[in-house]
Length: 423
Image (cartoon, rainbow, N blue to C red; front, top):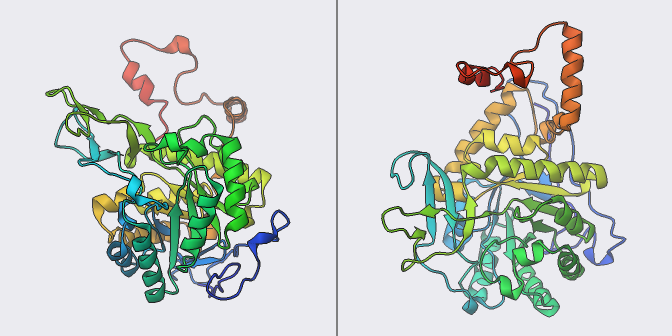
């Protein structure tokens, strides 16, 4: 395989800046390395390394903000296991306002309601952001960067609608040496009355203003984490990028009610017999996440310079194939949170091996070789009709399946349905 070496470019908050973010809006952005690497030896191992917004990662697999990044011990474990980057659990200035409850998770299995058998396909949480003192988290960020200076640590932050608070929080997390910031504009539950999380992410006017504050202050790359609980996710994504963010992450969890216990008639997760809607994740959200990421990627490609902005895909990743789908739809990195909670930090080895197998199958040498390759195959339903009509005429043959709704029969309904399924 052709050899390739990356140099960290753009931002380095511990040394000197190649550029400064305070020149906005006329900032000349550092270009993400976007080289196409072609293998000279078809048997050479695929290269999983990526360089995103000037941040060099050994692979595209990122610990998503949540319990897997909640303290020094678990983040250290993530680095030791080989994760490409770690996004810590979201912090704010005043952790005393954050009070979690237990139990705070509920699972959905592929079986009857309440069944203890079957594969876990859905996961709901009613967990809030970090309840640890900010000073403690900052100390641990600093310790991690001292011990792992070449690994990427990203701080996830969230604050109220208060410019001074955002500026103070950004300044304090940057002093620890973190490499980038992810802004939590998407937490679907907890403290919306304080205009935190999705309360900002759903309001494009608020989002534009707050992104302006953030990007005027930050000196490291900024990613905006998008909520799926909105009609058109490209609208806030567009606002975030236009307001100075280097990238977007999508999706955060989907607002949900996991279910009702049919014995007690109480909702899950049950806290003293009561519950509240929470965020839904795991395998069941994967198709929804793919659609959202596809829409954002197409918007970035058409309206922005793709090589200057990044997209981090999130949602139901448990296999290398799941990750490949996000990358094929334009994602630079792939985040995993619930998957780690279910399978452990060693999951990254399985993900890496399976992604390499996929790349070898298609003779891809690098992530950039296939990033966004499947976007071209999405179109409108009107165009699908046109394409199929032309294909039928060209083949001069009857297409597989029924010709019209009048051809359905009662007796052969299941077989007729199967005749028109593509996978």
